[in-house]
Image 1 (cartoon, rainbow, N blue to C red):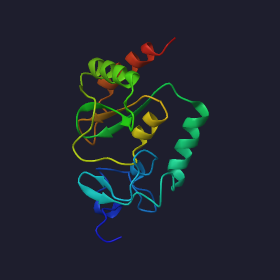
Image 2: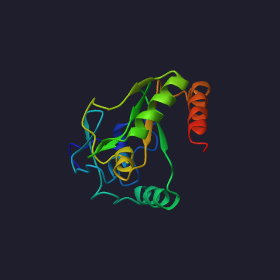
Image 3: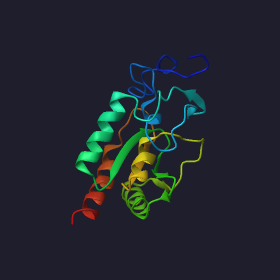
Image 4: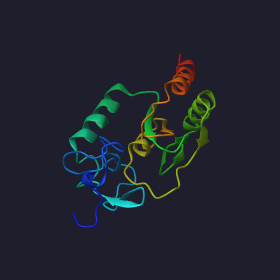
Length: 163
């Protein structure tokens, strides 16, 4: 589609797996504020024919609905912070709890709302819409998983949810 940012516009070292074979931005294909006018990093992206139009999104949706997780963590890059998720009803109280807990344990800044640009159809927002707390850990680089600090964040959340 003309004027749409696609996988061919992105170098492999920055976002492998962000777009599927249909050139759809998979983190704009979920059912929370979905819009055909999706944006990523200020660029218009293909969001699919509608929420959950892509197989990958359907698989994640079905898996989440089957296992009903207590919380979900996503790792993205590159902002060096932990972000909360929200949809139409705002951020869930438990999302704030786990965002702050993870950020403190791992040494990241905690940011309740991503506001660098409008986000529609993201997986994190969809989880919030079905009352599942979700956070996004934005790594500081595209190349380092920051294992030592992220294992501290994971251990803090495991302790929080152990009962």
